[in-house]
Length: 76
Image 1 (tube, rainbow, N blue to C red):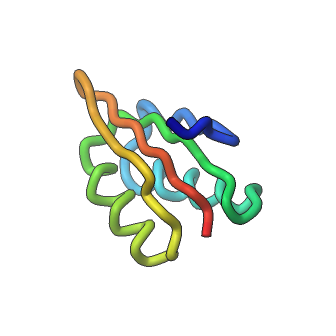
Image 2: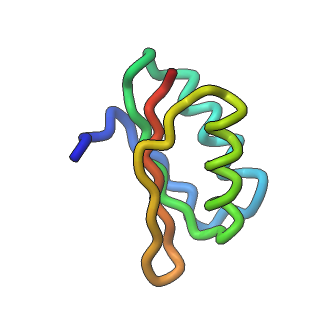
């Protein structure tokens, strides 16, 4: 299991805020570092996948339990 370099709490935020905050947080990281995101917006599942495909970052892991979703992204 990869330990995240930084964690972002985006719970309670609706689209597009989780993606915007993710992008801002990733800008502070170096290549290869990881960002753990916690979100409650169901749309964030597809949004994070699309975001990573468009930006070249790696979606290392994703999952959801009881309406909360988590993502681990490695910066390219």
